[in-house]
Structure formats: structure tokens, C-alpha cells
Length: 271
Length: 103
Image 1 (cartoon, rainbow over the protein chains, first blue to last red):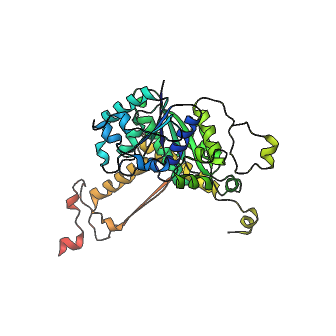
Image 2 (image 1 turned 120 degrees about the horizontal axis):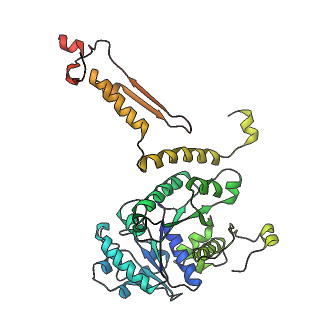
Image 3 (image 1 turned 180 degrees about the vertical axis):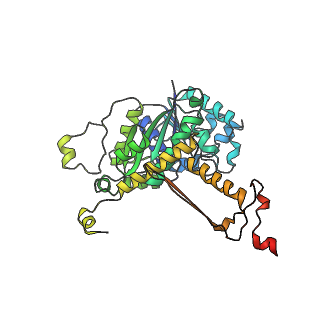
């Protein structure tokens, strides 16, 4: 049974698109059939982060309006066939997206893939609510910073109220993905700690993505960080998070760039 | 900053955590159906006073401070001494400042 995942946050710039690309790629690397869907109509960027910006012909709105067939709009990743992208429209206005249209597209995608990962736009407007509307699972991307945590709290409230699952009296499975985390600053008390964020949002943790230069390097190249440098700290963090999404029990660690003394001492499970 | 702080060199994260906890406790209440008591009080106090005297909105000062355990609402309404109280109240238009009705 295919799973529909929404990657959301409320606040912009916290790493939704980066995380959608990295988790989608990581799941594909782990053998899953994955499609990542960009819901950011008018400001699409998932195509760019995935390195497919020059291959976009049709988009999500074209499909919902019947102008293009779904297979025509899907862009298969050149590095890994199992991974596909459904881009957002860059030109249409966001009201062109309808609930019925999105429902039809998501249902078709569920027949074709194991995972349908929806990259939500920032905010709490139509695009964001439609991206989460049909989700079974939500990944709330949060930076350890006050405005991001507040907006995540708001989004968690909306996930519990405005999704199809919530309206049926069921629960969307919610997970926190804390990104741009700096363990050294947190240890000095300069940054909210992981425990602080989990306690405030009372939502279970999917993963901790350390602040890293690798993320920008990967997006410069149009390659999800798990493809570009699989042994880097953020890539390992995303791969661990992907395993947890698949139901594996993976010990929660904060990967570091270089294998330090502690890392050598305690070792790491082979990826 | 006192000397104690100099030696302790505490980070700012605990402040962030406390501010968030207070704010979110309030926002969760107000966005999930529970009425915001302070906002209701503010409205009702201003309406009640406004029934008897004309309130100049420039001379009303409302301050709220939501704390962890206790919140405070401070309503500071300036009423000129020249105002004659409307007899019986309830009819706002009657509450005309004395100096104007005299002219």
C-alpha cells in the first residue's frame, strides 16, 4: 500500500524542498519506488534541487486539468529510475489547483509508486493545505529557532484539523525533522536543544539534520545530498530518517562530518 | 548584567524555550476553540465604560502581559472631569462632554 507523505513547516526557508529531495532520493536508494510532488505553484523549486529543471514539460496543474496524462508529466530521475518528479506549475496561479484534481492525481500516483512525497509551499494557504490534505504521514521540518518552532506548532494544529484523515476521526502520523542543527551551539546553550523542540511540540522525532556545507553544495549541483555525497553527515542523517520512515528501528544519532574520537569509539552501523 | 551572569555565561536557548512555551500555550488555546479570556475582558470593559462616557480611543491604553502562571490586563481609560455621566446609562449618545453641551 502506497504511503502519502507531506513535507511541511509553515515557515519558509527551513529546508522543506531540500528534505523532500533528500528523503525521496534516500527512499529510492533503499529500493523503494518514489515520486516527489511539488505543490509550490508559482514558485516551484523542487525541479531545480533535483536537477531536472531543463526537463519540465508538463506540470501538476496540466495533469489535474486533463491537458497532460500523468506519465507525460512525470520526470524520471536520470540517476535512479525508481525516483520520479511531478513538478509544479511556474506560470499558473495557485487557485488553479483544486481538491478534486489533487485527489485524482494522488490516487493515480498511489497505484504507481510506494511513496508519494508532497513538498508543501510555505504558509498556511491553499497550496499548503492541499499538499497535506491527503497525507497519511506528515514530516514537519523545524529549525531550532523560535519562529520556526512556533510555525511548526501551528502546522501541527492544522494537520490535526484539516486533513482528510483528521476529518474521518483518524490521525495523520506526524514526525519532526529538525534541520540546520548545530550540536556545539546547543551544548553551549545558544540554540534550542533537540529535547527542547520535542518537548515543546510534543511530536516524535524522525531525524536530526546537522547544519552542513554539503547541503548547499548539493543544491548548487542539482543533486539531492544523499546522491551527491552519501557519506556526508546530512546524507547519513537523511538516509537514517528514510529507514525510520520505512519502519526500521534506527538509533537516533547526530551524524558529524568527520568521524571523531567518540564516533570511532562507539562505531556506526554500516550504511 | 550582573557579576553572577558574567561567570555563569548562560546561553539564550533557555529564554527561547520559555518564551515559546508561554506563547504556544496561549496560541493553542485561542486557535483550538477556547476563548481568549483577556481579549473578552478587554472588549467588555471598554463596552461597559463606553456605555456611560464617550471614550476617546487615543486616550485608552490597554496592556496585556501573558505569563506562565498569571496574566495581567491593564486598562487605562482617561475620562475628562468635565464629562457628565449619562443618567441611567445604556444610551451612549447621551454622554456628551459638559463643555460641548454648554457651548
